[in-house]
Amino acid sequence: MRKILGWFAPKKWSDFAWKSALLCACIVIWDVIFTKYLQGEPTSFDEIAIEAIGVGGPFVLLFMLGSWHQVTALRVLTKRAYFDPLSGVFNRHTFISRLNKAIPQASKGILMLIDADHFKQINDQYGHAVGDRCIEAIGHRLNWHVRDGDLAGRVGGEEFAVFLPNVSEEHGRAVAQRLGLPVSFTDAARQTNLTVTLSIGAVWTKPDQSIEQQLVAADEALYVAKSSGRAQLRFSDGGDGIPLSALETPPDPPSEIRCRRSNSKIRIVSQR
Image (cartoon, rainbow, N blue to C red; front, side, top):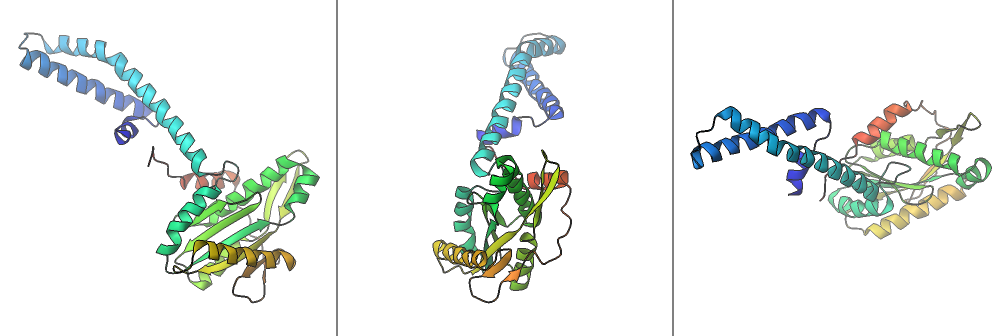
């Protein structure tokens, strides 16, 4: 029933027009069959069609408007249930739930915990509204760089997590370095451009290890990155940190493009 409702619910006005016309045509056809062939009344087709549309048309209109409203509201509620409203990436519950399914299916992947450096100072000095802009900018960064099969989520106040399944070490390190570049955002009230650096703790995942163990390993690597000067990428297997702020920062894509790409990754069905 949900699938039928999801199909009939219009997504735009052109959808509304042709689906309403289709339902009215079905009503007319049924009325013709019932009146002329089942009851055998000698009524002309025009009279039957006018009567069917006159009686059934308002109900079609009410059904289309109601289904449009219901499915739109359901999509909004579904989005709120799965996604963090500020950053646009998965919320913690959804990320962990999907991570539990993704890691056992991946032969090898990289799990990253990403933390915004000195985020409390941003909130204290510029206010929480500017801190929100910082979180939005980091979310745009993650949505822009991850693939459709990757996972990105906000798992804490200024902490994010990313999982890239089935990647080589070379590709995983390259993506991690791009994700960890300094993020620019704007203090609109003061008309000032600000930048925040990121610290990353990463672990190469294995299907035979528990999710909890791998999250702890990434968290410990993040702690080393934060305590060793921040703005660096650290792996759980040891080794020197990879400086992130020293890398050349590419220009961020325009905000409207980033938002459009972020929205394109949101695939919401009426209910699973």
